Length: 525
Image (cartoon, rainbow, N blue to C red; front, side, top):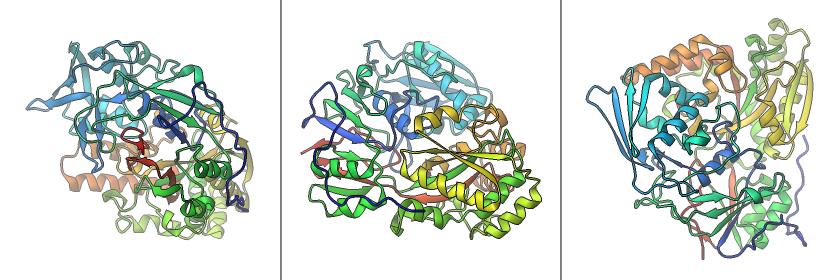
């Protein structure tokens, strides 16, 4: 695979997207990894849509930098002595962008919609028998059984975040996309300035009342120091690097490895790793249709994967920005202990192409076409897609590489009809893969699972035991059983851990590190 050679210096005459308002010291200009093709962070797990969600919405609870759950829109929440009733009270003065107050019915409708799309939310909803608006600021939750992770579900930081929307919006079917981006968060979405393929713009929400605590993770005081926030989608890495060096943009979230040395030498910008847990790069199979409705075919592909090849293809020789992680849970965390799963994953460490060919020959694969979707404007996805295409081709599979933009892929992967797609590669943050509650790719509940729709009742049963356990040893054993079954049934394949470097102008201070790029607390000067 040939990597693109990028320019080491700025490009004269950089053309930036035209927005309605002039940029200046009161504007923060951000380069996302992909174009904003949807504004519904419940409908999709796409990270750039999640990031849009944090701009315009707020959450009842959040996760701080130490992974603790803290109140955000809520004053707090308290369980009854038997754990079967939770009472949540909203902070006073919360208002949506249209100046309507945030009320208990908005919370109920938002959580009902979220819980239909999120794996953790589905488990949460299974324990919640009833949600009652006791008054405008109070919601009472009656549970059918105790659910110790009640607040953890409502404070999860990523994929899919339980954002609170107006009731009229939240009543949209969970499998249909919303078109109204009214929220109560620190920024207002400027719908008229949304230009798919170019960017989007947001204005400071002057009605937002921050909490008094210091910001941490997705919690605390969300104090905005900019009047305006602009998304500038720049698909070419050399152009984005030049824009960062000349000050045309202020923040580039996922730099390509080729330009890291360039930015490190720059006098006006710096490099930092925002998400220290990294991004879990994965290959997702469509388990509804041949050939990957056959677990033996999925296992054969897993045998051929060499994670170091993927790390090199994405991050080049930047060893500190990549790692091997054959676990289905984030390595280095309690459930990603490689010693515990060594017997399961030992054959998957080397990427043995001959073993993969032999396994494919025994699997019953009958030459069915494999469509690998490739989002052409995202270099790391291009690298993963092309490497996966080449691997399956060398194994003897009938493979087609289908190039498209990320927005098209996001729409197409939701299509369950045969002949649409068979494989796509993506990434989830380490926080998304840390345990059975947050790991959406480990859901194996058939057509209700995440895109790819694997059906493995044993994984679902072990996951349920994990949720119901009050003893950590029992939880650990349940998670270990999920790992064993995942290696056997291969709902997805792990490719590598990547720690994407970000670029930031030196005059931008206060940018917070963490799972999610957040834009409160940052300022220029």
